[in-house]
Image 1 (cartoon, rainbow, N blue to C red):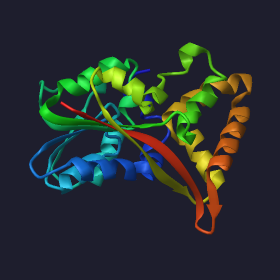
Image 2 (cartoon, helix red, strand yellow):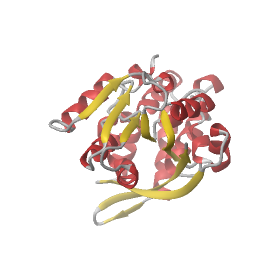
Image 3 (cartoon, helix red, strand yellow):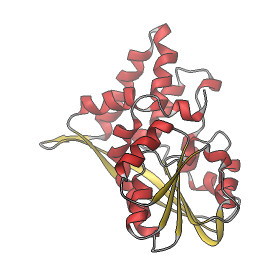
Length: 253
């Protein structure tokens, strides 16, 4: 299945908004008036929109037509260039952008080193590359670990947790990187809604469900996700809160 088809599964525009504050924070830190800002695997466009509102010349790239439709609707009236393309082979000349950023997108590339090289290629000398990725031990990083126990190795997908490990991400870029572990509080009205959205709306889990329903192991995996979220999250008067750690990696070009 092509990346654009994968990311049109489920409803990432809805569930991804719950942790979009991490990308928004990154854009606020890096975007400046008139700089050329690229949001790689932009999804519904929160980071590109934030950059544009600071005065940056913003571009959002994604492989999913449906997610780009959400991005265009959200940014109506704002001058942003939207491009439908595969992030591993971006349709831009070398050194096209001053900031190249990806919030929880580049980590899904099948070849991490090639993805890092592509991010470097489109970044101008003196520019900044920034990547956000879930840490391996975070509740979202653990999702792939839990699912992989039920899947053959070839069906488990990219090892996204590697992008959340400083030593691994430095190896991908082949150059010194600055890393910082941060936490985003992801909120839902209830634990049950959190599990429901993560297991039915995220594209990766939609694929896992399709693979497991035939042998009836899907409910067992959902039970494990529920147990993981119960242990990691907090339920209080305002609903359910899940603190999720992620790695912010910054590379100077």
